[in-house]
Image (cartoon, rainbow, N blue to C red; front, side, top):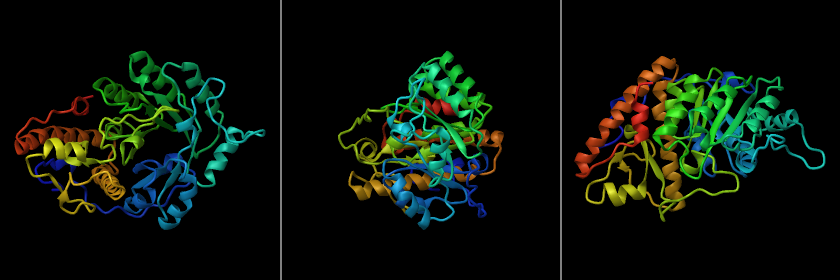
Length: 378
């Protein structure tokens, strides 16, 4: 049991031995399966030692990532490290310029851009800009140019505006493009808040992975990554804090609901939800004892203890990395049917934890609509 108060036996971490595994450098279809990836930025050096090199990996993002990857690799040999292209964060794609290529007067070709990435990164990612909802011409242009590449080390990045999930026709277009890609697809959605935060979009997100017949990575996501794994995703990459669990629209900023914005969101694995420490202190545990967590980071401490100071934030992010890996440990080497069955048991158990917590704090704890979607039969 990892937590007091709430108990979901299906989310208990597996104790099975994970044998050493080499990094399948330059081979996307060999490197990506049976690994849980993390999206990491400022705390990458602190998070990397927590990731099991044989069943995990890190996507490094942000302006400092190219400067820090060498030190992180040196200190964590055998851990897959992949650099996210700046274009995914900074560039709006157009039909004429779906990719942001380096260089000034002598601009690099797409092939050369990917070769440049590979000097540091174990795999290459197309430098695709963000694609506005309904901009089919740009989406097809990115696919067309990427399909010219004859490489095994490359993923086609599709950073799509969240509005692509708003109606059936747009979802069909996304699936059709994915299914024409000759490369694995790195799929993520942009929003200033959670792009998959409604039941409608959660259903659309699931549908994409269920109907894709080309390998797709659920990238910069939250626990929806596990729903994706249960419905055919090749892998998922989950951020340790909210802005890494989505792409903020290029030129925009994330939206903070709470003035104590830096208080970390903590993953309560048994409930399958991230909850801000501030919310837990002010609402859940204002008049009741806090849940205690027994992961290797918390070691029995109260889950609601952390505030907005940098050390507290790092502790909270480290807890999330460990909690995500604990959740993934039982998914290793399961086929899609096995993963779907496990996810069904985990989501049913997560719904059951809500009345457990409600009884402890003596107030209702609503079940999020997205969790209801995850718990529904495909």
